[in-house]
Length: 447
Image (cartoon, rainbow, N blue to C red):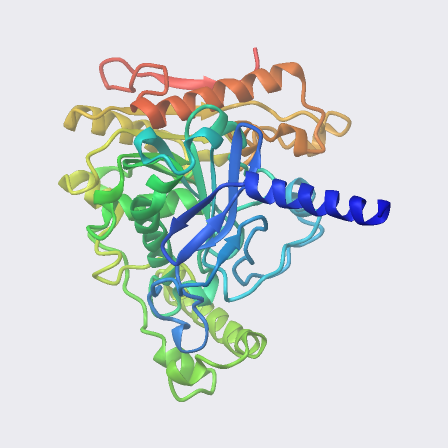
């Protein structure tokens, strides 16, 4: 009897814990999150059908419905990508534990929301949609730096997404960008169930994620869903005389398929990924080297990055800014010291000052200059304020890093969290806009 009582108590405790976690309906069916005190997280919600088989190199399709309740307590599989170089700088920083499971079935998102807001559309909380970086060939939504807990504690729902990368994301089309657009629409259509406001979505990304934001606020297919945008280490605005009219259009993929020994792109849809990679990579690299030799746009020749296609990407960001078709919203834009001119520099200030002169919606500039601690024992290897280093701070995940962060670092992290979430709420991060008459670039460093 005592054993039965113990089993019954264990079952009751399990059922009680299960029942305490909220269940809501989204596109596809019912999902259950995990309540962690004041924050509830839903991990691994599918926002589109798995882009596999006949759906490889196709626009994302509607999510496939499921029966019963999907328990969202595990992150979804990430996009196909190569292993990280164990000798590379970022391996120790971010990838030392290895990559999670990879799959072509990768179109998942995660939601962190205040527990009291779940199921209450009337809350209308601001929403931030995070797009990770990685050069359009690597990265995923729940890297060690990335977490929405501190955001939700500040009253902002954070959503992070995976999207197709590399040859699966961009060979013959902007499928990775279309994935981001599908996720944005999913958030618009479903976020009320989490307590969010579909009319107050801030797009936010860093590095390749920031370059993605530039595409999304320039495209007529997505810009109307965006209320604000945060562009981190994605460069700024070129001089008017150097802004291209359009990007180079790339092949539809059929020539590449034939060069790899296949009759067509259709013939490659069901080829195992390992075989596909082995046959296509040498061809892609050959095109890249040929473009370099002929003085052509070698980036476009890679066919593994966003490119002009006349529809999804119908103009570049610089042209959209100068001709006034870019999303007319508040912007927060900046970089870190090590970004230099390519991903930071004067282009950041040029963008903010141009927008502030041509729109009633303000643009704000910043630079992150904190030299991260931990390299002092070998000054020759001092990494300084390196590319992606600010992510620890603006997500509030310093405690996950090996670096010996100080109380001043945690204070800086709180300042950045407050500024980023304030911008999502109000369109103002807490300092004056950057204008030609009154230049103002907020500097983030320890005091």
